[in-house]
Length: 177
Image (tube, rainbow, N blue to C red; front, top):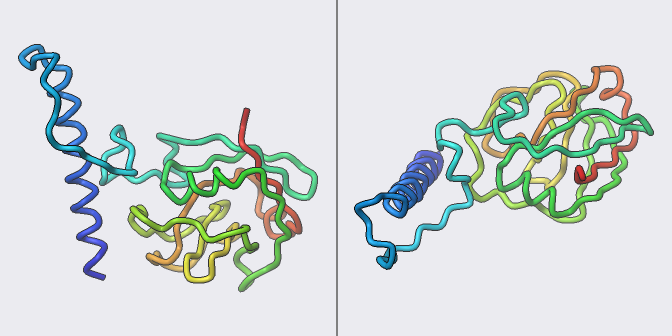
């Protein structure tokens, strides 16, 4: 569990570094020809503070997607996490779903998704599209899930009613145009 505070500190440091670098580059006191000597790399977006990770319900940096559940279109978004961006790189996807624990519908994407720079764990809510890292499967929760776990990454949210989610047999996820 010591990796989570370290990951949070590194993400915060990288974000602060990017913001300082941007401020320095935009400053009138900085010569235009002066190039930074340090390269800062972070997969976290500079516009999102490390303490405010996007979630299914926090849509500050959503990626719209087109989702069809058993032939019916529903509204959906992915958050801006590295795992969600990795899922977006696999689109379009059509997956057969099966029930798991009377709480979620699960399916296997064609490959495992990245878990680097994962946002802080949170308990899944009804409609959340998640990724369970140990098994490499996607899950759509039709009931609120258990407590937060670092193994379960919330990728986004599907705006569909509980009955539609609980009975879903097939999902198609496409990039929005």
